[in-house]
Length: 149
Image 1 (cartoon, rainbow, N blue to C red):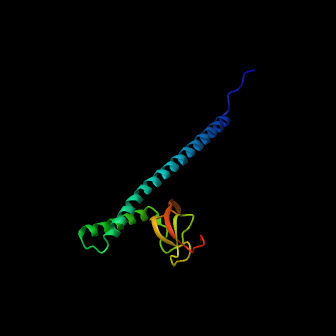
Image 2 (image 1 turned 45 degrees about the horizontal axis):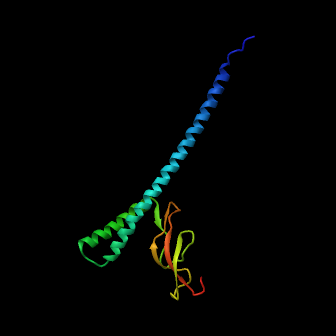
Image 3 (image 1 turned 120 degrees about the vertical axis):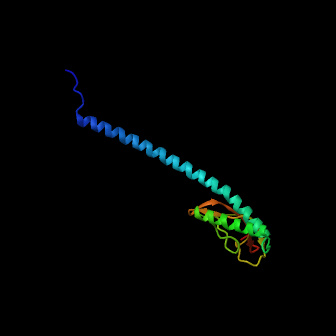
C-alpha cells in the first residue's frame, strides 16, 4: 500500500507553519537591528554631548563679551541645546539641586558650603537623559554637612 500525497489542507497547514517560523525569525532580526541602531544613536548623542560641553564652556568664558566671536559661541550653544532637545536629550538639574545617585557620581564633597548636604555645588560633567533614560552620568561636587552626609 502506497502512501497518499498530502491533501490540500495539509499542504496549506505546512505552508502556514513555515511562514509563521519565517515571520518570527524576521521579527527577531528586526528587533536586534533596532537595538543596535538605538545603541549607535546613543553613542552618537554622547559624542555630540562633548560638542555641547565645549560650546557651553567657551560661551561661559566669553559671557558679557560683545564681540562677534562671543555672540557666535552663544548662538552655537543654543543651537546645540535645541538639536539635543529635538532628539529627546535633556539635562538633569545640576547646581543648586540635590545630587541623585541614579544620575550623578559624586567626585568631591565640600564641608561647610552653607547648603544642605548633597546639594550640587559644581558639575565637572553634566548628566543627561535621553527619552527619560540615563544617557550620560554626571560628575558633581556636593555640599557636605561635615558628618559625611
